[in-house]
Length: 366
Image (cartoon, rainbow, N blue to C red):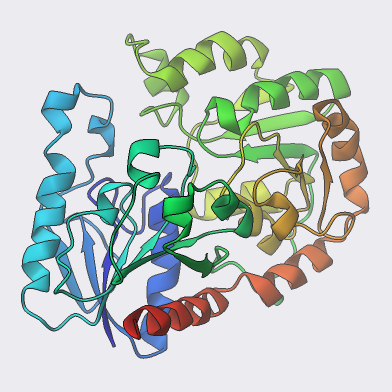
């Protein structure tokens, strides 16, 4: 089987720090290739993911341009998608596995290979597209959780063939456990839906040390953000108005984007990973990574979290924001070994690849 995986033009695969979708693809590709699949990756030129073939238009990721005026950036995705369509003209691709938001649902030739489009985001977005989708019999979609698909308009849901939970290469029951520290971590982009402002207030009120790790808009470090003068970015405004007033460098710290071993060490030594969600998280990469590193999850029971976390076994969930602080202190009773064993059972790359291979065969049989 030869599959073209379309990662889009925004970030390299694997990403150098932040990049949820690109991390998912970097996790999936080696497992697919181990199962005998040839992978053609449509990405940017500085991607380092080993594949059988690479397709690219841009030499590097275009993510930093997302906040530019529309008339300056509206050609980025079409240029990338055009290169994908040119590659498909060779006629040797059995299936396209597309991960490009919105545009990945349109523009594929019905006479070409079948398409599986993975939905990684909030499905209440793009109502004019999702609410009227009629992509024909050769395109199907999948979610990254069962809950995510319940929020899809009927027209989009009619194209769905199931969901596949995300995975992490960290999922191994044989990894040595790290010594736990005193800090709690919130990992992810600083944005209202992730609830970092709530986490920071809770840290002061409930008395626990909190580390916030993730970018603020295009800014990946405190010095870069401090030098920024443009407040047009909504995440930057959220940071300055609602999060920064609680960041004192002692009880609450923001360390910017972390990746690789630094990120793993930060999460593995945390006594809990906190997810104070204000939206229905569709996939939860950071959730399964926390479990794989032996760190229990404390969070709001919405979105994918109830599917990923066994309450009182691998974490503690609540529907009450005010209860989160108390649950952080109770999380020390959760066994790190049980968290890690659950990740090794459910969230390995091989498990994810097996599920996708089943969907590939289903779509190819249409």
